[in-house]
Length: 327
Image 1 (cartoon, rainbow, N blue to C red):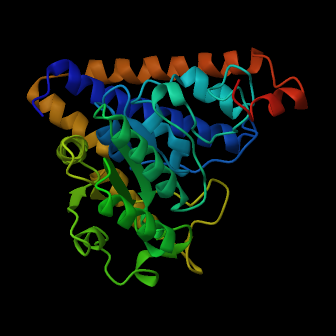
Image 2 (cartoon, rainbow, N blue to C red; image 1 turned 60 degrees about the vertical axis):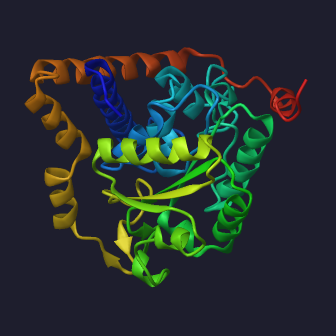
């Protein structure tokens, strides 16, 4: 994809927006200001941003619990105001405060969500089948973690997509950890894209720290899906910087994960630093531009927090019940 300067800036802005909101949620939770829990997506931002920023209107996305979907929601135009209000159970949230943090925003292409590992893929197949039948050339991009590949539901759904040539792109964010379990304990081949090749479907491995690599792989897979070529699996190699959830143990089995390894990834493999430096070298942005983007989103987050506190809460049980059925 031949990106314009504005498109390149949009990618960087999305990366920064995701990182800053992620950090705000971490800080708010640890300060007792967030009523839920949080699963950070730090240093994994390039996967969602690269895959989702330039999808078309009408395309669908299934996110995961990692980062509560913000690396997919923000690039698709879901506002920080709406995300914040949803986390605080307010009516101005994208589900009227009823979801807590499960990303379901149909008007922005997020049909629904389940936190059960790999279960999203069956739902994504249903949406992809609907897109195929309506003939409008729309696609589904479904995200899964690497541990999903160890579950039967994943392979059943992906095989169904392959057999029916569904317009589906499965992006596996391979950060090497399934909650507290390292990948080598639950799959034989740590290159999980090979599972796609085993049933005759393209399986592509990309550097998940390189937003352009993710974008280009997604663009090719989406074009194939729109043309009726069926599904593709993209494996984005990345790293989970923090623990599975904030406040919980950051362990691999019964051993603490390496702080030195985390520091190395943050110092040398941070996707925001890598892409920001690329745009600095190309003369697309200046350091002042990057500083301004960061300052502006921090101000936006603080305003969203204040607006969420002031917003009306869920009024009663009848309101929640009304959300269960279509008019």
